[in-house]
Length: 519
Image (cartoon, rainbow, N blue to C red; front, side, top):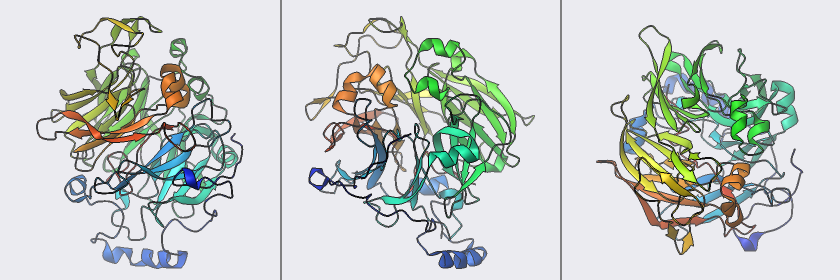
């Protein structure tokens, strides 16, 4: 586990101070209101059921049409392997308002009080699933440590531009109550609870995987959600109108924490299945095995329409996207709908290089699916109005492993006539490759970072670990399709006051395509 340290949050190099954490930890409840006020609000909730008093938006299209343009975003910054033992990860706040004097700058850094957390994904204490509940507010960011199993509850409601600590749940408590570890995806539930997926068990093995439940008011641990056994976990998405949840598989934490070894997939240390759960009973109903074509299924996205009975899964090693859907019989089935061809190469670890689809996002209007190819170096936009036949309508190469001046020579390529040229912004070469990204509510902008996980970054993009990662903006043509890199926006995480760091998942304070679920 990480070592405890005491370093304040700061906004720039001149603010670096060694002292107590930036805000005292508290067990105050999860809302802006004190407990008594929150209780009173709960008693009147039925009377105001039809008003917009809770967090989020009434429908996905309401978010598209009426949601505000993003002004700031939050994203975790992770220490690369050579500094993680003596520098902490932190939560960065970035200004994305083009009318602001600090546009495309980090305006605040909340340093974690421990080392080696490996901050990764985050989620909210409340979202559009609590739209009609006036006692709820989207004012706490749930930030688990992928390697430490520590859960940080961050107050972003008191001052959204300067997040502070609200509560810390220690890994020993998580392990003792749930037996789970490698905490990943966090979603708020309409019940007021918060659920976090555990990829493996407390020891990093694949013998047990499941889901941790937190109370949405005091953020106390409540135990396990699951009542069935699975061995590997990762991501999940639920669709209450159909009483279903779908979860995916990455691999055994003790395997991927050390980097990726292809032979460990053959040894069964990585997954190739998704699991269908009964949302009411918490029992597993089905396991859908994609086989090797669906190796390492990572991100799962239902369509945002809460009446929809289908969604998509991006499979990293298989370089595929699968559609899963409910059949007329009431069970679930799947179909491969996207295959990104591997490239035959020389000068790389293997004779063929998969694209490694590391992230997928469905736009709020359910019209487009976006994906990132972390090894090949491009982002793609697919029109999915025909759900079973996605059509490629936009593509942009940003960086990656097959650049024209790299040591890798592509000997056979089904898609490109030549290897992509390197890209520069503000005179700086873009290292690494597009990885995590977030789509704006109106679908017109994508913000993208390039870190997957520090151990994998070091293995595949060591130069990025030395020089730090970046955050970019891609402009989207939402009429005909098309992606264009915006060279006016550039966040250089190699120029951070504590040294280069690796930036990962992006969150908007008001909710986004990957955190809001409608019921």
